[in-house]
Image (cartoon, rainbow over the protein chains, first blue to last red):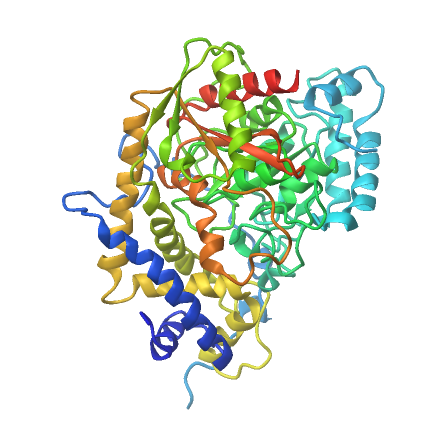
Length: 99
Length: 477
């Protein structure tokens, strides 16, 4: 196995996912299969190859900067319209710090 | 009224000759689409009010003697990962089951400015993650060509509505083949333009360096015209390209002397039901005057591994925004902030999303970043270089889209690796960011559609459309 159930729990914590015990077991199996295939990349010698982060085209460095002009923002009502819980135009979340 | 016999031109002609008004046409199109939809589950939401408003604007322009626009009165369906102001946009996910966006994607704005009529939103794999449309929280889509089979994915609904005659055109999104593969499975044309050719503003982010919006249509010409309307720089997407947009519909039809490459790596071991159709298409291209030669894209066998690292890494970051706060869904079982994040995400995301978030988080995590993520970015560079070298020898590349035609619903659901591997022929073009499309090239002995993939170099959509249209004309005569 390339990945243990303990690894899965650690990664789930990083990803903010609360996996059930069932999901942890299945995920370990699935990810192991995928990682096994992914290991194929180690066959390739990539010394001196530049990592390609983006499809890039020739343009001036400042080409993507737009004119700085005033315009109306999204309204407060629109901004919070899809929130799960709001209060007085704000997002409402569970208490962060216990007193 | 089925829309199967209609094109952009036929609708325009009907409107200008006053055979029908845009509003009448839209009402009939909506009624037909709503009645037919239970057969395929391809539409998730209809937008009658929005559609009729758009149609009314077209009628008003015609009444005033103004040009009603390049897409006047044309019924168009939109994949449910592209946001539409005031019209629910679910991304095929329980997480966004009630999400109503406060803005429109740039592509949507441009379509409506051109007189297009958006009928509704189409089903897809959750957050565009899948190759069969079976990962939708709202049930699978059935392939109109064979109702027990998948339409492909992730833009399965958008391919299906065009094939079914419940839309004339549709929009999909492609990250690793999500337009071309369903186009091939359903027997319609589907286009992935050059990365950056169409603004991604309003396309729900899956893997930002790979995501594209692109058109589906019954004919190559109509797909080119829809791309025409959407293409071009948009200041709201910094990665959208400045390159001028040529007139894509100016198709000469003459392929004499054109050099076409056949990558050996895409044909070795290809099953005959698909392979025979592709080879027949290659023969036809030879008859049309193309010079066909063998080429090599040697890094092809590494593409799936490369893609599933880069795409999942980007997805794990992009999907972090679904946190139980801003996007409608929050777990009712959560009492603390941390529980709110974790339970909301566990309850809101389906299995495939979780798998990809987990894989992406893993390949980006401490100790694995260089071995997986940076390595994959280097391999992406090699795959892109393969194409650049090939295009020094040939004007276009032809290949299969998928190793097999549409499979049965449920057939491949339990083996994620084999599902991922089936994306091999489409992933390479996505990684390189080059234009590529699927054009129908007949059916297997079992009657299932097969697609021919045509790939060209960056911003040379013209050559891709030329080959596709000449082939389409020759093969349907």
